[in-house]
Image (cartoon, rainbow, N blue to C red; front, side, top):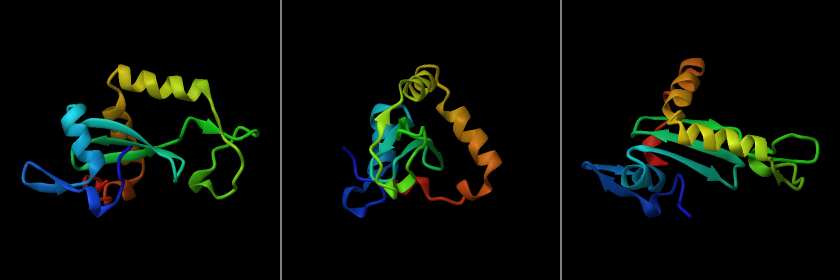
Length: 117
């Protein structure tokens, strides 16, 4: 369990303050990481201190839909297909490529301070 977008768990990496997720990617993932943001019902992909994107979670409701931000309150169930897709991205070192495509398609992702996550 890590804090996301919280100042309580910030630490320093290469002389720069970073969030817990970013610090974890450098400590355990060679600069690349993926995290399930439970409260937001989304997956976070991070590469380095300046690149990241949000990815659909592997949890769906009975209608096959995600509940972004858990606003509807429907029970969610693990979708094994989506989970295996995320696992495959991790195993095949595809996270950075997904981030690159997402940032190319959506320029607002470039402006996010990913290092604070």
